[in-house]
Image 1 (cartoon, one colour):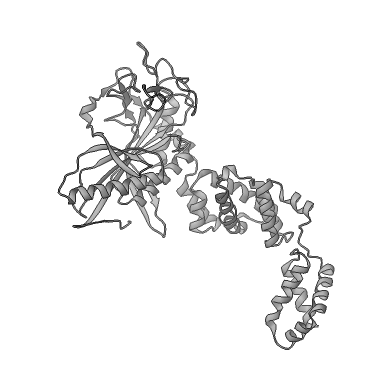
Image 2 (image 1 turned 30 degrees about the vertical axis):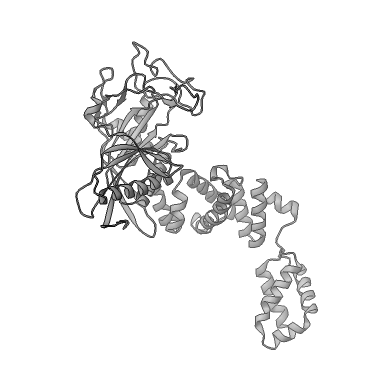
Length: 495
């Protein structure tokens, strides 16, 4: 557990955090209509009569959205409720044409589960999940299109969301950040949400309260629609500090909904916090309850991919990769897929089992490839180097065709051109020289030009050996095989 405390004027305060993450369900159609869900379409071009709440239009459940929610619950080790129900959550807003949102209140599709988060340096924590329920998104009000009017885009109206509600188990911004990252990773592995926070397909409502360590829970405030891990952490830091200052100043915390301003990195009041009774929930009369049998749930369980925790454990146990390397490689599904493809090709090209090449391959991917991609501002999916070309490069280094230094030179050219390393080596004459005849001649020339140092070496100054190696490498343009150079030099100096 992270020991995070806010030091106020009257003592220390503990922060209590719970998150409600809204994740857009991956599907080609909305939750209750056949309208498209693609991001970036022109306003009001993906709106059916159901989404626009035209009179007499009835919702029809999208079965794929239901399956995605169940898959997500299974991946999180949560209870799958065999009976669940949709309710109407009543409130008025311009971008909610029905005047209510179809959601799930008392009977959600998924019950309790948990997420295991890694906090580094061997620290871990389990965060409880309270529920996952399905609901439809509202539209979007646009206030910056005109100086006189607000406009409404209903493209998002009716898009399927999973609201993933945690227990108030987190106690620091670090834990909340790790929770969001891990949840996003699992959703992307399952394929139930693309996790793109910048596009709004995953966003978090952050519930924050403060208390004296060991006291009862304090009054919480909810910070709505935070769309990055960094902003989640910043919102918690600001909001917790604000609450401590109010309490220590003799005030009381009012339960309310707040917004996070990323420009000022602060929260501000939006409205008083509604309770469930304010929404006048009641069962939606147009939708039957969802009823699952065991066969339906088990069929979806069988479809689940290998999840990040299981993959990490396999990398460490079966491939001998370090815990750190395994955690980096499995954090994102795309990175793990890229690595596994490259690893299989590397083993095949080098004629070795996976276990013999895995450690070196993982080091290269994390240090060389990820370091270079980070400097270029690219993800592995945008890498100019394919898994096939990376495997070829490691094979060329492994069989002595390239020295370590030449390998780095070829790697840089690959980053710039995306070319096959074998083509680069052939066209630029970058093969490592292992021909003993050519190296004998180069060594003889170096020793002849440095007869005085040869005498010193033979007189006991053995540290000069490195000088002769360096001169030989220089004479061959860095292409000489260092191992062969060492062997030939020892023999020549011993003569």
